[in-house]
Image 1 (tube, rainbow, N blue to C red):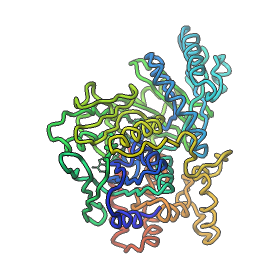
Image 2 (tube, helix red, strand yellow):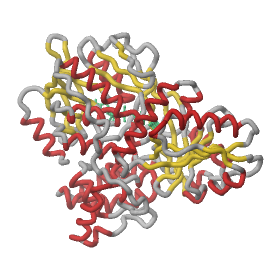
Image 3 (spheres, rainbow, N blue to C red):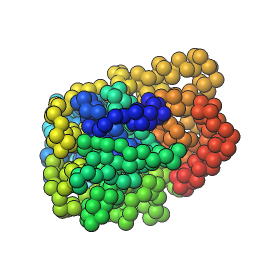
Length: 519
Ligand SMILES: Cc1cc2nc3c(=O)[nH]c(=O)nc-3n(C[C@H](O)[C@H](O)[C@H](O)COP(=O)(O)OP(=O)(O)OC[C@H]3O[C@@H](n4cnc5c(N)ncnc54)[C@H](O)[C@@H]3O)c2cc1C
């Protein structure tokens, strides 16, 4: 996957792409995979790096949504559980079965959550990951040795999926390319092109060279998450906003605070929120919050009260009482929640979770939903987009399609396991040049070879791309990631033929971004 080749493909393109997709998060990438694998010529444009937006900032769960079950939204849970099963089947190197324990402190919680989780199991049917069970006090402590024991009566154990969000995003981009899609990061759409009031292309700026490109498509899909309204405004300056962004914050601490294999799920904190403490890549991810925000941004910042909320509740459930000093990283993401009513044009709400709109100009907008359901969202979008474009309706083939890197029986103790079938290629790099086998930082598992691999094969263009999304150093230990930046910049510069000035700028830009992840 090489960016220069992708840009070249666009320059050489005669006539129209079948589909142009704006936005390289879960939704846009899934749509590109679906469109390209049905045989449509596809171009995806992402203004920054793939998954720079919400799609690298999730809780990393592939889940049916126990919360939606509590709200009685059975159809949504059913759809998500089905997609969970398909994703484990299609990307087993990235999605794993994770046990969760709901700790019970009140007498009614055992029977209540016990029955709720049985319904969850039943809805998952054959795609279930394991039967839920009520646990005795002893068994609960066995699963979660550092759980607050005062008043504890027992727990309920259930199973859901866990994944690496930005790695899946990169693997989806690679899968789309394998089906001949052109995928360009750092390509910002600035204008929609129209003929007879119908959208038939876009103007985009290559953010790295500053050059502008015009490109035509039979249909244009707006998959820009919390930025959806910006594109709708390009189409119709009078369009009413349909997105109400909501910020979710996560805190990452060392796994010693909950050394067991199970995650903790608190369905109802004392102020009525859901709280997770999930083991992830050798750390513990705590979250999350739900705070309405006025406007979308690519680097949302966690507020003090959100950090305090998470730490206060974590201390209620974990005997180690984590404090600010224990925080390795804090990250925030924006949920693209859809306001009721949308912009009033032809709305086809195919599920209560995601919203698909066709504007009068033929612009197709897909938004809402969640990572877990990205494949179904993509299927619905491409069905709709092909109709708008007047293309032959080719059948969707993604249900049983392997995602790039597919590998069964992954050994999760191998530091390169999340590369799946690409792991052997990285090992070859190390064999050719043994110093690439050295670690980039003593506190993190990442190797120098991963930087070289990321530049050569995964379209990493900046130090941030490597530290935030090709590896997860920024989220796992932000301070360590800053210490890694000079070496990463040097390795990248060697690969990309960049000078010392480029390295200096990259390091200082990275330090600026990472400073917001450090408390
Ligand atoms: C805190 C939090 C926790 C979550 N946890 C989970 C979870 O555990 N499991 C789950 O299933 N889901 C979860 N979700 C939901 C899930 O992360 C989102 O639904 C999903 O990532 C949204 O993807 P998207 O592609 O629609 O948006 P985004 O990922 O934001 O992608 C949109 C992209 O469009 C690009 N873009 C915008 N404007 C332009 C332009 N003019 N030109 C080119 N590109 C442009 C942006 O740069 C961005 O990369 C969570 C969400 C949040 C906020």
